Length: 346
Image (cartoon, rainbow, N blue to C red; front, side, top):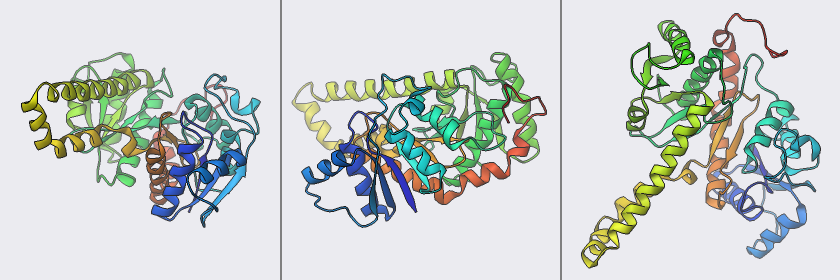
């Protein structure tokens, strides 16, 4: 298996992507293509005591970098020799099995959609992170790629999220919930009330395991394996969880530093605190799968360090091994509504 890594994407590039990818090569046995400025990649390796390219690691030179200030919709076209554009082209041409980038989310989404292309029949690709919940994590789909969604988008998100939870996370018959402000089918906006019976029908047909509406509180407690949402609501849900985690961590740190007694107490529960930090850390997951694209694409967090990039490569390997793209492709027909295509879409 060969994973393409954007060596110039992210706040800590090229050091984090380069070292993280090399660690993944050594730990998981995957081949790596580092895409970016060759001289900078080699400099990072030299400064880290790596004299020669490890077996299974190669460099694909790309002279340009997509910056966060670039227009995300056009950056991959305007900078055709960027690490992001070249990496996506390598993926499109079958020279690698998956692509990992910590660069601009918008540019990656636009580039993956227009270069690698969506799976035929999928209306929109969706960002599907695994968020920490009481049942060991749930797939949140979508978390920001599509702020406004017609019902068909959410129907397809439910299917794709269910397949991901089953085949990548290993959840048999994953429970699918529609993020809403109440459990009753009548709750929510016209989007939720319209898509609810569609999901219910899919569940009755045995295609997904839809358990109804789920409120944010129940979702965090672990009521479902897949949280279906439009990108606007999903992003608010995700950012609220991240902010709550940071707030709790800061308050616990302040509490345990109050006096000698609390400091001793901190020592006694240090193992539990480390486990809590690990559960809440996005670095452990590594990245967010971009579902609906014809080949596996993983978006790592912009602030990813080498450890997070290593885990993003691991996630990319899992996506490839699971056959999630083939699984979605084989079931597209049951995910579509009989409506005219919009703006020439499939």
